[in-house]
Image (cartoon, rainbow, N blue to C red; front, side, top):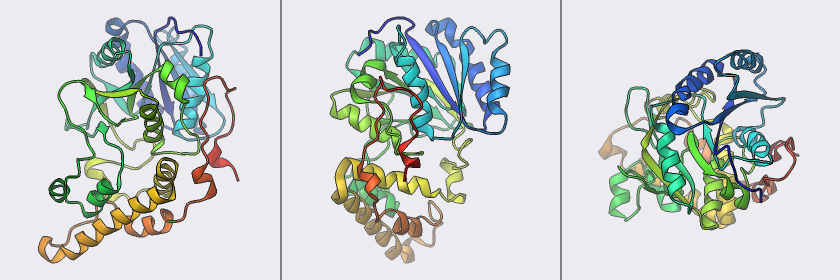
Length: 346
């Protein structure tokens, strides 16, 4: 394991055809260096192919950015976890690696004090492997930021869309809400600060995921290794969900179907954490919930599906795991950067 020393913090932002968002995000970080202390920012371009990498390199090569912002262009779009891994591997293999690595989505704006609040909590609690921010919608509404792990019961509640029924059955909600710093099973990947020691011990992202569930699986491993994960509501981040993927959240999710790779990522997560039995139990929990919702339609009235085509997509892409779904591909902190992501393999 590398010896931890200054600089204490590095922030990684992955860009995929969102250069304007990245520039705005980094702008919001400038004043944070005065309150949180010096840190560097690495902007990773995930094979955008639209001129983003050169545009960002040109922009951040000028003052006042050049001393603390750099751009790492990648040739391929290897996915969220893989792109973050490429920056983290380079950071962790330095003679003086950072103590903390903060992953920040490009479609975010950090409110004043957001970085300092995360640093204060994770620095004061050595058992913490990671901390995350409070996410806000652009209109100021609260967004989900910290969560409990997926389970058959929570899949049932998601399928039926009736939180009150879940509470009646003793199923704790997926979203963790609190006003003070405290634990959660997994944290939003839109703004999460990891302790480098925890990453070195448990490994980085599993690059068998293209997008979605990669942070859930990583934090599942961290929890199994004894690291705690905390939600820090005082760190506030405005998040425009789906800017890079085109998959919205909140009020927009009802009009946009989710891509195939989201269902494949869900399938892989359940296979890696619970095996075939875990995947099937989760699937049948969700289907049973959907059946309950369908039977209650005469009482509840017709309601738009939370996610268009989810029933058909779940049946098609969630019940037939591949051999690759059971095979981990976790990057070690000391492996050479550049290995192609496992999801691209045959």
